[in-house]
Length: 478
Image (tube, rainbow, N blue to C red; front, side, top):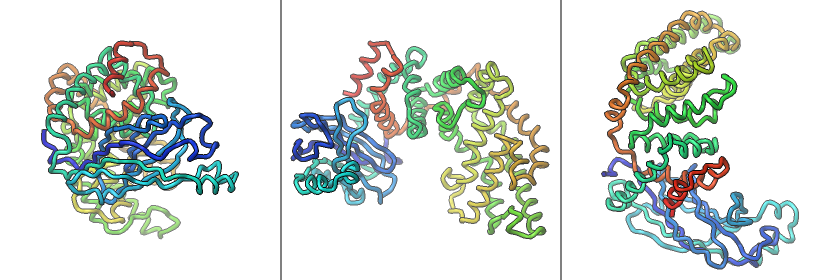
């Protein structure tokens, strides 16, 4: 496997803490005889956590791997004390902030860092004398970090070690997909909303590599519908199934959205000024001219989307056909709304608004271009999700006639997706294997493993019982 196309990676090893004892801290922090300490490492939004250790033996030797997307980012290491080994919430006692740019060389580093002190909020608000006494008497706390950085064209881990990790993943995936994905679906139910999008992206990438993405999506969709009581709650904001469909679409649909959106986006970019549709800010003549321009652009985008049936990836057609079948069995008449929301509102419209991010347009667009694209994507989102809101929305009310004229066209588009997808179902396995021949990035494997580690001890909340699988699953993290 080659890592030539992957961003730089930072390998960190948290080794030990020294000069930590109970007398170093106020009695407000802990009442235990021994301190329970853990570390949280963070680069941008990704947080990874060590296990907890008890004084006096504060040795970890635990390894972490980060994908470095920005040279100007920081590695933050927070040191916390916990009431006990099972507690999730701790008190911050100190931290280290390290510039990633200073680590960007090929020489491994191992050095001591002195923690910056932190005054607990409870002390800073209530007892200034105790705070001052604590700060004056506190000893220096040092955390020893072994930091290894390598550039993109260098291997962070040897091929042999990566192969070993992938072998572990093959065993792990066998456990996760067994019993109709029972353990993996339980894990999905526990994901916090703030982690859902990132976890689902890594999860879909890993499962695609093992030809299990579409089967898992089928089960996730069925589970989402079965546990939902009202149709309005289907695939809500915090739904893991919703995020997995969106990320699956992004991963397999890049060529699709580029082929259908590039031409109309370039049409919008030709307009160098922001198109204003607020009557209070412009005159009548300019208002009517702008409304006509927006309608013209909306029609170009809609025609491109509706005419793209043959270009939609077969896997997406299969997924949406499955959505239609499952949803209609329980909530008749709601499947079109779900499909349009998944395909257009959460996949195509964000690509219209951010064509640079989705790789549709290479040249950076202007602020005016972005504002016009935002307006068009917002109207399209409203049109496909809640057409009646176009009439009620003061800014969008002028587009009611356009909406009424095209509502039948967009529903016909969904019907064609569903009917063409049902044919693919018979050959789904063959199509799936052909499509998923690429290898997921090593970073996706690492991210997925770290998220599993983070949430594993919460699975017992839902009383998952297969002890043998649970035992194997737990040993994988040792």
